[in-house]
Length: 335
Length: 280
Image 1 (cartoon, helix red, strand yellow):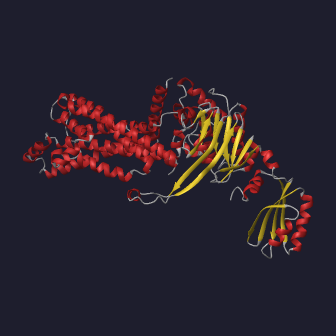
Image 2: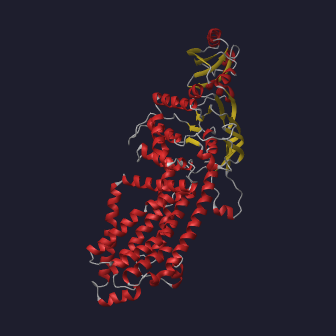
Image 3: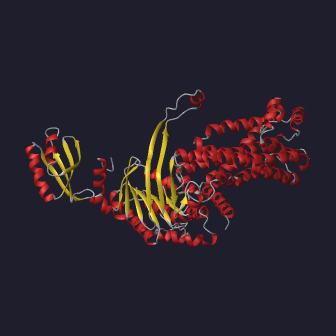
């Protein structure tokens, strides 16, 4: 790995990215018509510090600003405002130096040449990453071995994702950024890839990844930033984030309704925190945070009965990052 | 390894990658052999028909305008230029666009290699195909139309081609750069290719154009390349007679390359601001 100055692996401050929607034609400019393009804040003032040697996760729903943030860190996007330092190097002033120290896997399998074999793909990118010719063969062998991939012409989606990871490792980077690395993978392939990511940390590399899978963030990351609407709404270790819920357990209920459900919700709220409720076809889905499910569930049945409703399904689950997200935003990650 | 040497190696690797991908499409190679024979042959047959089967007076009238009675050779050289132009206007831009659609352009731009490699390497990978065109057409002229090109003029024509390569590839790169801004370049390429065919004397002697159009043609590198190849092949004059043209071609190459780099830099920065590098 290339030695770099001390300090955090990533230090971003006041990061903002505004995109314009719509078009302003040449004639509109010529006629001096007002600019009516809509401005959309994809990233809206993010401060981020990723320490060296940790796996740091950006967790949020689709469209939250995760990929935009990653692309700004990786020099693919120019921020509207803010500063970014990667491994002590100013991204805007010295983008090539940053790219030389960065292994990135963005848009996963799409970024490979399917008409080339794995080795041909890696030979090409080794040259682009300025890997010395004498080291190229060994680097490619190491990269393929590290993702447990053989050279071949046909790949499954999981193999392509692993090949994209192998490519990111070619420059032997101290910092690896992975954008939704397990999207589209079957459970086994996703487990394998997560194991590879843990190995990267054990090799002393810093890993910054985005995901909208709460389990992935929970299992893999040393610290997680929850991002929504372009802003970081919480940042801590998964355990500390879950402790912010102030509940020991989460109870999910499905309640058959005869009315609008307001009465039963009001009664449930007396013995737990109703984090989320959603009506669908006469059924009310409720997520409640409570100190003890053993105490809350009988109370919930009493509340439903007295409101003329029927509890159809009860599920008691431990607190997850999804619950943290719900408590912070009032929405589920996949909404 | 210095940065320049590393970029040069990346440049070779990028051109090699393009060639490796073309290797997976054997039918494309078949097309390269088929079209350079069939299409110019139809033009030659049309010429023979219009000249009354090679009537002496018609040939003399043609020679007065074109400087040679070898109208088959004239047509084939023009068509070779047409194919070269088509490859260059379509090829590099399409390659860059394909990278954008595939998602690999962002992966390339994530590496420390100069981003100009992505602009200039695909055009170079088209060079073997263009050379194959020239060879195929030379063989067709010899085997089908009985026109034997002497070795000396052929070598001189190759010098003209070699000197014309930088300016032609600069044109290709200029068009490829526009992909970053406009996405599809098809309509622009059609327009420009048509203009080149009309203005540069690809299929007819330049003197057939009105004076103002000839002045415009003098600003386009293909005009010099096609005219100079015909001059050395069919008029029996050496490179000395076209030395000024060759210097001009090198000057065009420098200017257009600088323009392509400038346009690419502006559009690449714009794409990084607008987030359109990976959009399709």
